[in-house]
Image 1 (cartoon, rainbow, N blue to C red):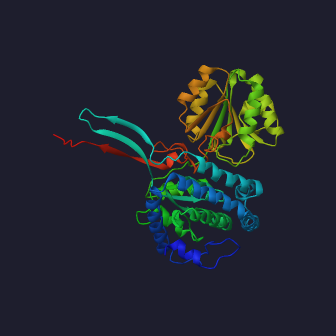
Image 2 (tube, rainbow, N blue to C red):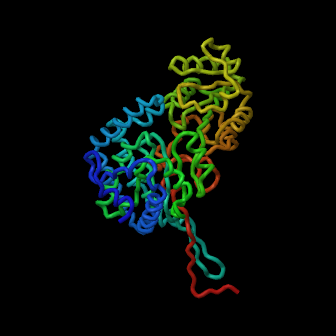
Image 3 (cartoon, one colour):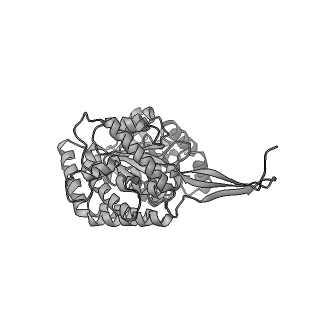
Length: 446
């Protein structure tokens, strides 16, 4: 019996069948527990790599149905987490990430169904060719193996990450934050119920059943070689620790220091609408705009309306001297503001001398996540799109489209800003590797 199977046999709180119980207080043998989870994940990954696409899709659809069927239990578990978080003084933006309601849970279930409907990336031949000696070669997508996901606050990541990994034929080990412990357990139990009903391995999606932080260190060490990649989803301190300590590859971004540059001649009505959405639709997401750059050549027309709109919508504006001059409510920006990911209703505003200066500012202060230009000049737009070295660059649209679901990926496990393997939203296709298949007719190498 695997580690998580044993846990399922233990008494569980709540009404969810199969909900795993915690393994005990701090000081338990976390290393042994995590090694067993890693071994179970590797065994499940071997089975998943061979699972037919139809079986994976059926399992995910059943998981979505189970999430809906157990909605009451999941929301009750989430209420416990939210109550504890409020008592602990969690800030508003983090509470927003933690909180589930009927609409958000339904969106989570729909997201699982959308992933189920995606084309299966496993086995896709991406390129094929024949050599002069008659050898026929092809490159084919294969699962990565075992993915470890370490996340904070957002319990919906349990479903999103689990579904995407499984769609790509990977087993996944999920380590949610202590603040979302009850919510994640409830969602995970529902998902396992659905996946098992389709004949998929119960250990395909495992949730670390302890709050002990030592479990994170064990995952970063690779669980005896059983973890192939780590994906952190959370605050800067978590991501920094993962990037510093992980002994396996990491898909991540440290922060989302997102810029919107409004070029001379931009359509003002379009700019007002886009900037409002980019900053204020949800301030806590990594695609939310944090710095607004405005072309000094058209500042007389653009700057005051943009600043006034932001303040009128309840956003604190910190600006350079020019921004302060157009509205006395603008607070002076410090050098640190240009480097700050607020994740709140705060934005820094600065005038720049054209697109080249905007690109220089973004290169100096940005995080290579998402940056946008608002302009009606196609040539200027192409300069920005070609020269800004970010994972996502946008023309005349909100930066809050920086999301795998909006890209048509059916969701994302995170956004990566590195330059190796995956970059931008990491969906099912990005959770695969590849191998070469070589077919011959008796050739030998001279």
